[in-house]
Length: 359
Ligand code: AHG
Ligand code: MN
Ligand code: MN
Image (tube, rainbow, N blue to C red):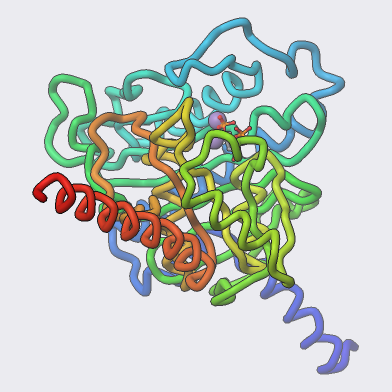
């Protein structure tokens, strides 16, 4: 006969293993409304996509045609990897016949992809980056997937997804999958940020860290310093500052999701500023920066273009890019202070030159 201690010990383990993603979404929704049920089902589909992609990644070196380039170039002008195409298709497949999602807007597709049989009922759009950090794929380093869910507004009759050109404040859910030593799924529906770890023996994502909060400051600054020659002087001022002050450490993994996850947990700041070659920056607003900005604000941090909150930016087109400064509140503000200082000096110089011309 098991004693109470044994039963309680099992109870903890069983309860923990029962906190699946779909159950957690309903619990976070504090309701069983149709939208809560939809969100729970949407997250379950995203979890299925994550498991399918994780399975392929763990065997990529052994599976014919899993790695390497397709020889195609995508709408971003970037060389497409075979895993980009596979992962993009996985998201499409898990949402077909779901009745949930009418449209998918992906980094890998120029226009939104419609699932007509879902459109009369499925009033949600999934925006996603199916593989983030593709340059890490062929060297078995961490990659991710980033997603956001928005409600469809209007009927989008011309099939260009114009109603998606709204600020990130219209996201109803966002998150990412980190394909690392373990596969993590981090999400928010606006009630905090929660981390799930895939238990391969169960085939389920199990809650491993609830209500993640980012420290107000952290030691990590994450940026590709190879772009130093291409940056605005204000960003160089910030880099010179952290080079000359104790307490900072550089970490850059080449995959936004991995760098972001480190900063979410340890504090610090990730930057992808505008460059000479990409004045608007490299990262895409709708399915990279805005979903992560949604999360970081839920975790007590900030996300900025340098002059505007990321969540307030209204894109002019589906694949719009913005500079990104994201992480701990104090560290994002420190970067912005160098931008503001340079802007102040520029205004003073212009005023001085104007006054000189007037004399
Ligand atoms: P993606 O693989 O989806 O194109 O994203 C890559 C992004 C992001 O993950 C990463 O932070 C950044 O590109 C790295 O860019 P650099 O190689 O220019 O540093
Ligand atoms: Mn990406
Ligand atoms: Mn990508």
